[in-house]
Image: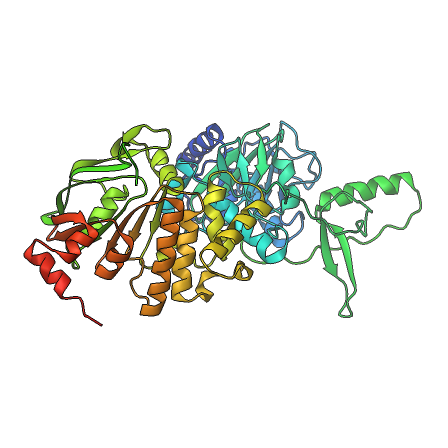
Length: 301
Length: 260
């Protein structure tokens, strides 16, 4: 039930219209960062103010919302944003990827393939992929306009020169629709291939930096690389300790102070679904306690 | 020197005002392939303004600059789109700054600095980019083993040589140099000049070099332009102008070189 003091989904209608216009433009020009008049939200910058505004603008009364943080539905950030919309919009929330129509995420793209009926909203801390190479905003805008992207490979070159391989593991730059270079937020590069030709609409909101960008459904997204150092995903070489998955992205969980550790699926819903399927097939198997993934570092959009 | 060819770079009546302040007035010149032109004069004489105008980094208040592109067509720089101008500047041109920190990415390794232009024109093979960077380090007399060091670790002379390598890696035909030996001590200057002279000769580069040091002009250039108060007061063959200056100001300039 929605609280009477708030407009539906917290933001006023004019603001939502403004954000929707920015989203439409972003969808029309895939990968282009559209400036928008980002509002103050009742949470600090770095906690997903951009994603929350995008979600508020696309949410309808019949939507079902899922919020994930580091792949998990039960971390602080995810829980509080889910509660926020349950209270201000009165929408149904879920932790199941398959049931959700809008999914707001901090890093991960769910393991379960998304469908055409779903929208994935990313919280973005730093939308500008060229930022660390070129500090001037006027210059980076010009570089995007002219597709002047040589410097992007310099970063990857430096990685190989220093580490022997491309050591960028998250926020790995991609080229969208053969035109714009885009920063896929702090998403691990494991998820980059999922962005390519994805059935769902992917929206990116950066609240502090006041930018929205998008990947429309079925758009070509290519991770940058070198011919002799091709793009590779990284995954800990272990099955999930809870569900045994060998294809999912893993979190490393330290279990004691003597070097004990375990690897578990970062996507809690995926892990849960696999385990309940195993429970129903093998009767009488002991169910394990779900282990909470490691606490996450602070900064996200 | 090029025989019976079109000039590479032509400037016609270049004038630049900074508000009511004159940068330079009515400068015309022609530069041929393989030719080195020195622009000399004291501080504030308009040398750097002229260089910026020629390199398309500054729009002239009047006059125009034409350049013969690699396809042989001579085009007005002002008529190029910005994308074309940038492409030209990073392929067919070089620009060596006085302060190497402006011309280099100080936080990026030497290899990355040299490779940047190659990557910008579409090189996507790490091994080949690195190979090219190594061979260029060698050519500018930097130990290729230091390829992964950032230029902040380099001495002033090495930074300047690295900057030259970074500019020459795409085999430009025209290089602009703004006081390339400024701020270096004399022995380092001599080594840099020696290197520059050899590279210019080997590669057949056309160069516009701005300097207040007449010795640099004497060593490197074929022709010289003397500027004063924003105007060109004397031009000619370098040896001729320096040995037998016509204008009183040039005579003053030549005579003020300290004899050793």
